[in-house]
Image (cartoon, rainbow, N blue to C red; front, top):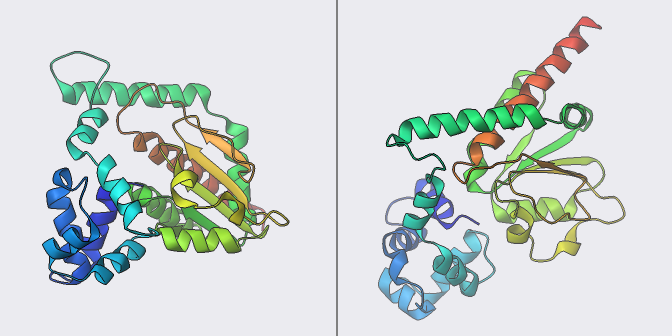
Length: 261
């Protein structure tokens, strides 16, 4: 779970000066010094009650303050940015390095693209009445863009980012539901599901997991779509491209259906 995306989402939605805004703002500005902070200390620093801290944790989809502390300890923004934009190529111009390696990524995707699987996921989007696009905050733009593209061709898909809502949908989903998960790291289910057995085993939903990192194969995932990424920066680029390929494929399917009327 990307703590920075969660906290910035809270700040964007909440009114300045509100309790949740104050807590999120304080954590963002002081994250490097909060590894061992207690609930009492955080409440005092934010001038709110302990109960407000607990409510804040639930608001962002965490079970308790301990889960928040774990995220805070793993949140190192400077290191994250350095890793994201570290390049294999060693020219002096990082802008050119970024462009060159992005081109290499697209060439690699073109070489290894599984058209059969792309066609299958497109056909499923067309077939299922309830389609959910899921991911954490860093995948928000990808899901919203794909949902908008599909809507252009009269197909409605729900883009879901809030952990609580994701859990609720996964718990209640049946074989009438199609779920497409975008996860650059492949760790979506590890982060979002407290218990893997909440998925309906008798009538399971059809779930696709689209990722750039090879991950464990979950029994409840219908197909893993692995987009091989030799580089360690901006993995969302490949997810964006694949979402566009889905939209293009769906457009072709939609236009073909019109000619058959």
